Every structure is written in C-alpha cells, then in structure tokens.
Amino acid sequence: MECTNCGARLEVGGYCPYCQHEDYLSPGTVLEDRYQIIDIIGSGGMGCVYKAQDLRLSNVHVAIKQIRADIDDGLALDVTIKSLESEAEMLSKLRHSALPRLSNFFAVDHFWYLVMSYIEGQTLEEYLEANGPVPEPQLRKWGMELCDALDYLHSRKPPVIFRDLKPSNIMVDTRGKLHLIDFGIARHFKPDTSEDTVYFFTSGFSPPEQYGESQTDARSDIYSLGATLHYLATGHHPQLTPFKFKPISTYISVSSMFDKTVLKAVSMSPARRPASAREMKAMLAGRLKRKRARRTAKQKKPITVADVGLAVIVFALISFVILTGLVVWIGPIQDIVFRSGEFTFSGFRNISVSGFERTIREQFTIPEGGDNTENPKTFSEILEANFDAARERAAQSHENDNLNEYDKQMPVE
Image 1 (cartoon, rainbow, N blue to C red):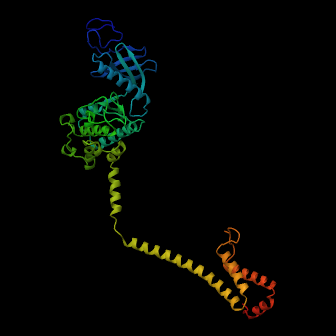
Image 2: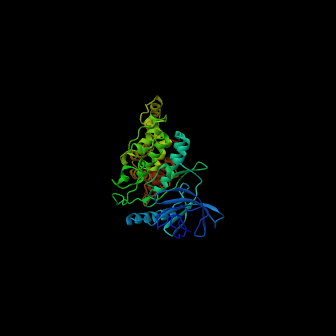
Image 3: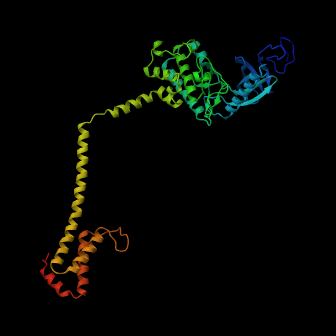
C-alpha cells in the first residue's frame, strides 16, 4: 500500500512516517492475515478505533484500537508505549460483563494494535446528543450498573483505578447495558505513593487530585461518576464551570436523595465523597436513607404500656423461679435437720451424724471419692435409706436395744 500524499510504500496504510500524512485504514484492509477492517468507529490524537471481522472465528466482529508509536517526543512515546502495554496487561486479566475482553495484541509498521470485544451500541455522549437529558429512574439504573463495574475494578489486588470515566468512554449496547470502553489511562493503585507518576485528566470529569495534587484512588472514580450523572441529568457540561456543580434540582425536578448523592460524589475533598462504589450504589438505590431512618426510629421509640407489662411479667417469672428454688432446697434441709434431731435427742448421736453426712453428700452430689453426677433417687428416698443404713451400722455396734426402744417410740404411719 502506498501513501496517498507522497507515494511512500506502507505496509498497512494509515499514517505515513515520511510525510506525516494520515489516512485511515480503508475498509477491506486485513491485519495479521486475520482482521478485516469494516469501518472506523472513532479517532483521536494517538490513533483510531476500527470495527473489524475476525476471519478465523466465523466472522466475529471485534474492535481494534490502533495507536501510533512514532511520536517525535521521546517522553510522549515512552508514556504511550507504557500506557498501551499496561492497558493490554490489565484487560487480559479482567472478567466482567461491563468490561471489554482483550483477545490479541500486536504491532505492525508504526502502530500498535489492541483487539477487543466489539460492542454494538452508542456512547452515552451520543445518547445525550440524540435524546437530551436522561430521566432520574434511568440514571439510577445506569449509575448502579457503573458502580458494580467500578466495585469490581477497585476490588482487584492491587485495585484498578479507571481514571477516565466520562460519557464518551461509556457505551450502552442494544440491550440497554453499559460498558466501559477505554482503559488507556487506568492504573493500579499504589498505597505507598503520594501522587501519580503520570498526569492524565479530562476537563470537567476528572477530580482535583488527578491534576497532580495527590494520588488518585477509588474515590477519584466516584467523582467522575458523579460528574457524569450530573451531566447526563442536566445537559450542562462540567467543563464550562470546572469543579462547580449546582444542585440538579435547579435544572430539572429530581428527588432530593438523588440530588444529594450526586453532589456528595463531586465533593472537592475525597474524604467527603462516598467511600466506595458499594456505598455510592446504596445511596443511588436509597437503601442508606431507609436504614438510617429505621435506626433513628428505633432510637426514638417511646416506652409503651406493652413494654411496661412485659417487664412486669418477666420480673414476676424470675421471682417465682427464685422462690420456688428456695422452697425446693429448704424442704430437704428441714427434713435432714428434723431426722437428725430425732436421733440426737433420743441419744443416738452416731446414727444422727452418719445419716446426716451421707444424705447431704448424695443430695448435693458431693461424692466421697470422686464426681457423682447421677442422682436417680428422690431426696426422701435418699434420706430414709441413709438413716436406715446408719441404724444397721449402729445395731452392729451393740446399740440394738436402744434402737428397738426408739422404734417403739416412733409413731406408726
């Protein structure tokens, strides 16, 4: 292929390094004997994006990002190559329905190429131009979708910061689903770094820290999301009044919760923005407001008659259990003292002491030689059996006569 301006021989056409003339790849051009160019999707200072067919995969459509690699400025070339390599490496590891899939990466002539999944649809910038401001219900839905994608990126290890969220980098497909389409300036968050090494920003959508004041983090993407939602809701481009956002309600009628959520997201200070994409999503859904309202209601709940009645019932039940327990224990102790007293006053001290000791041990599970957790007998049975055993031992100790006398004195039951 020849340059249409100077006639120089080019491998694939497009940009001519000899005369700096730039021609777009014409439909039908084949790259790497595999990708056939169909049409140009968009272009910028560094290159173009094409729609193409993958001839090896049943004519599947792909998006090919072409980037010039012959810039005169050595620093700019180095930055461009590093950015491209970083984007390729990053995309190869990401798996999310809202993110493009990278399938190939190669260089031809003076260009680098990224081959990605093709998304049929339009950017939100094009959608806004065609349809005007977007209604709040649709913006809430789209905002939550974007929060899911950002949460996925921010949850990587290390976190991935998109850094260029704006309507022209978000596509809505034919099913109404959103996709992020340009990872050219995305970066990994480095917690030990106070600022970004390379500064990239889009006027109106990038937060203050992205201009070099400090390192970008997840809250930087939250700012860009807020600026995007504000722009889509009002049609007022944030570039016209950088870092100054009026309430959306001054333009159109929206709920106060949605208005406050967007304004909180575009706060100048990162500390005042939602701390994460998940928190931003909860605010867009209105869940945080409802949770706080429930907590406040619980804190301010007055004491009712039912509450007082329940407290009285609980107190009565506890008192009953305690008193019942005391009666259960006092009764057996009285029996022990009474029977022991009978033997003592009758002159049978040995029987009294022996029966009293054994009964106490068995009733209160105090074993003579170890633990005894089984106590199948009632207290009365234990008492009677132990005193009977004591009498037998006493009988064997020549106290039979006195025992017979005692039996005569005991009433017949």
